[in-house]
Image (tube, rainbow, N blue to C red):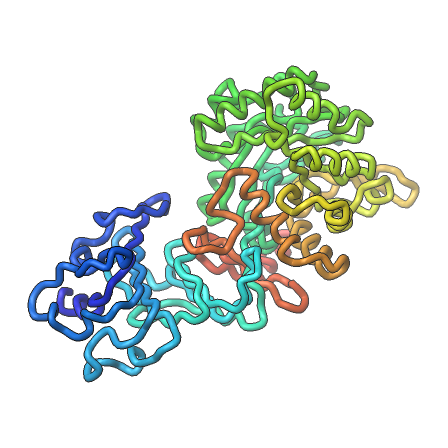
Length: 502
């Protein structure tokens, strides 16, 4: 090992370690393998490394290149900024002599080749436009974004992304992952989310919640469903609480749920201005908001309160009062279904101008639209025209919720299941039909919800971020690949399985 390793590490380097489980960056030298520690040092101080033996006099040792070292569990990945001669010219291979690319070299054991994935020639929208780039993925993380990356000495998989956008995986702030509905009787309960349906829709992160039914459904089942989805590669989180007040929780308190249960990020859906809710007072809302805020502070989570908005004329008034009369910041609330009707959408504009965030629902039906529902893409265009920035707007699918269906005479026929695929559908409609900037539209389903729920490794394409990525056709914006936790999911195969399952 020493004889193979030493010649390749005879140039200055920047060492970046990774924690074995969480993947948080660690600027600690001891996190590197012992076999490489004596060869890796900081390029900032330009100190000479502790080279040993006759190699310390080699010409290659004197060369000053920038190198990044990533340490994952039991291996070390070296990325050269300058793939010029790192060894005497006589010993160079044709790949060594190739210039203009970034070269990757792997050291260590316990390595599986399918964990390393190179995406070539993608137009990266991170969601900001980063142009044509190669993206290298290892162990579920993005580890390099460069105009050209040419790995050497490593087995890896490749996706040719020419003619496609590479964008962050979608972050869906409201999905009834354990099922919803039930408002038309037991037969109208909707089924749990199928993980393949999420991947086929480009959703790589979900926030699960209960809704009206917190009797036959509960938080233990919600948590179990989230963990089952996580075991299948989907980043799944959950919320404590439901429509009901006093609020129902798993441990007996909002604060305890957030502190003690890793998957619980906040509270929701708390129903306001809706006949199915408990008609909470302003003081009750403030108490829930305060407990969620304290629980979030203690656990390092957002503690955001997701608020289901009904169609009563009171609208957002209770939330405005809760933040004006009590010490609950306005950004701590996330009112959803804001596009339920035009009056509520206009209130949402005023709310956003006060500094609050708003969430649009993408699942709807023709009957609901006739009754006043505004499609998500249309509502987004309206908000952008009103000057509300993407940093204050998110869109969510309300997946697995029940949607009423009526016959031609307006009589109730039954309930459909809200599709999680409505999220990417409205992204496409916003860009293709309303001509909205792709970077701004993407932010509402990636970066903004990730920041709202305090998920810093989600919603962006960046070195160190989770490798939850999508490839979209540049012309049609149709989804061609979903990459979740660094693993490419065959979208077409999964769509077929979802269709076969009915």
